[in-house]
Length: 191
Image 1 (cartoon, rainbow, N blue to C red):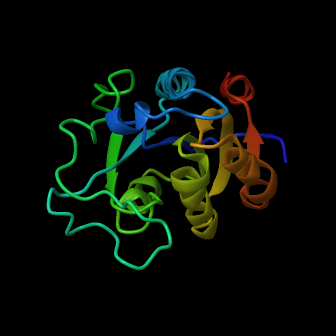
Image 2 (cartoon, one colour):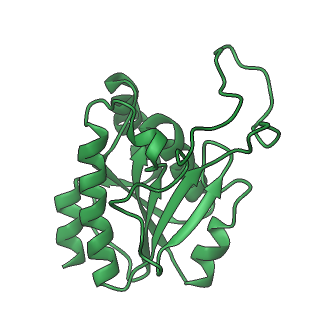
């Protein structure tokens, strides 16, 4: 369903726009384009005194806080994370009023205080951006829906490692979880 409205108490939730992730190539949008569009949204949310939540993923050097379990995909990262890789990109960092949430899973709700931050502020809707569409963004959208939030997905302010994964989330999953719109469409609703 195309984006129709934003609740008076809406927060922007930005997934994994941090240095290590920003260095990855994105499809169908470059991570640089996603960051630029997210900055536009963040500036507009701040201008309207609406919360901006910057979610980052980070693990300890020994990997003891990484999710466990068997997977078919090899190559789960271990060892010392790159210095500064878990820091929010400069284009979004440096706003003391923003909320920073650190996660250790795909989604931003499980094992974090995201829900507490949102509920204490009376938030009823979230607008999601970030990387990767089919992983962190989708996992967070699913949990937000399950927590009773209205979910809006900024379709051109998110990207994935593969265009097919991005498109699958947009066409098959997101219509079941909320409304989708471009950055321009969401900005128009903020005006």
